[in-house]
Length: 109
Image 1 (tube, one colour):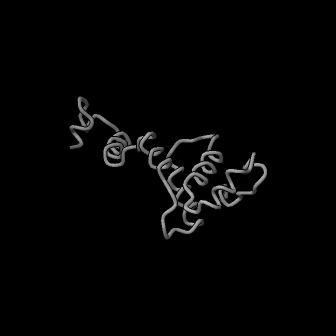
Image 2 (image 1 turned 45 degrees about the vertical axis):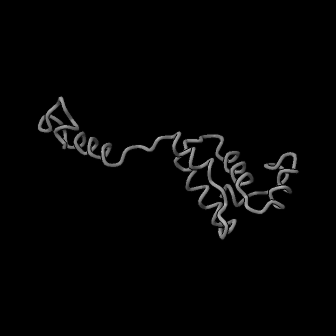
């Protein structure tokens, strides 16, 4: 397998670090950003899932999305859009500037 991964080079002509890199790339490929964002944007709070757990899961999903400087906004938006409780969601949606007016500090911790 290693021979095929480094072809047309031969394993004996490469440094150890290069061989390890080829194997890591093959067995642990970098996830597709679009696929990771698809999972993130499709995440809704589960029936028996607490808000705290939902936030933890959103953060976990966001960590592989390469969102960059829009992390806080993306977490806030996905949190509100994915809430199970319509009353809380409606209340949050009625706030003009949610990031400034309401302290969603647990989202950015």
